[in-house]
Image (tube, rainbow, N blue to C red; front, side, top):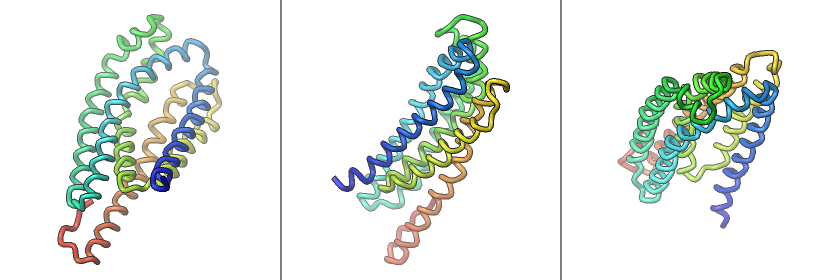
Length: 223
């Protein structure tokens, strides 16, 4: 129960914090009127497909890393992470290209109003085109959680994602600036998240390598 709570509670808190940040962002979007609201809502429905497909690699990464740690197969962990990252990059870029190229027809599935479609296209061009950044961050978080570490990813997410978005929205003079500036809060937060998660993962792997070396283990894992 203690181990389950140690991993599960920070993950639950993280999900709640994301909801709070999204409420603030939605409030900023609402200030632009019903047309923009409808366009963004349609674009977000399309983005959910991008997220769910790449999130599968996060789940795989977390599962395989935890299993290999339990089995003492430390040499496989680096290969698991690299494979999941490459899969995310390939799938994410392919999906983003399709989302941008067919943004108009995709948004039109939900609403055929030209103004609404244009608002949805703008959202997909800014957020949908950069969704691979979130996929990479998600995989790294899954790998860290695979080590049984849950508090650190929560804190990194709190600052790198929620904090950056809330500060960005607070600095914007909505609705007197283009709604595109609100959308930019997403890729900006993902870049900040990657800038912290990647070094943290490398630090975690090097710490493990030093520990195994001190124990005389012959199979030293790479990053």
